[in-house]
Amino acid sequence: MITIIAAAGKNNELGKDNDLVWHLPDDFKRFKKLTTGHHIIMGRKTFETFPKPLPNRTHIVITRNKNYKKKGAVVVNTLQQALEIAKNDEQPFIIGGGEIYKLAMEISDKIELTRVHATFEADTFFPEIDLKKWKLVNEEYHPKDERHSFDFSYLTYVKK
Image (cartoon, rainbow, N blue to C red; front, top):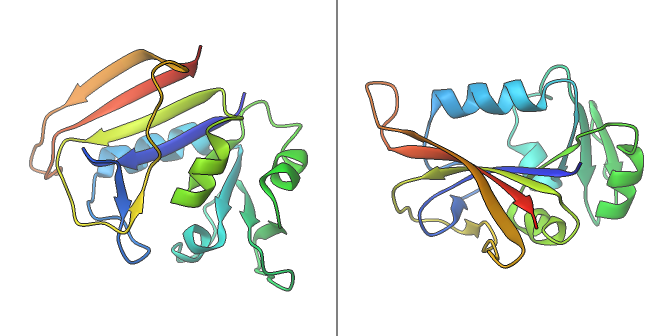
């Protein structure tokens, strides 16, 4: 089961200048819980936003640069190569960025989306979810509080 995991604003905003535009501690905890022990597939720019590789996950980085090498990452040139490396993982996760999400929409089985209920200035966006192809199977709302500046919902979609 190939799973896309993302957090996006009301207008599908993902980030600006290679960074998130919000801070939601509970979403980070959920991301860690869901992805620990799995392969996480991402583009080079997403990987380079991490101060260091995330523990207990296999990082697969997709880049067009044939000479790119980074400690802690398996580097490939296509999404298909990434999936081949992750083939023995029952649930590899696609974690971004925008271009990688677009490529993954057709081949993914599930989307774990944190919808941040606000609008943001952004330069990277999550693709539209085609509700003819995807079914919302779970929704969990979280109001803003002292640790979270925005209301947000965890949404789980499965391919129809």
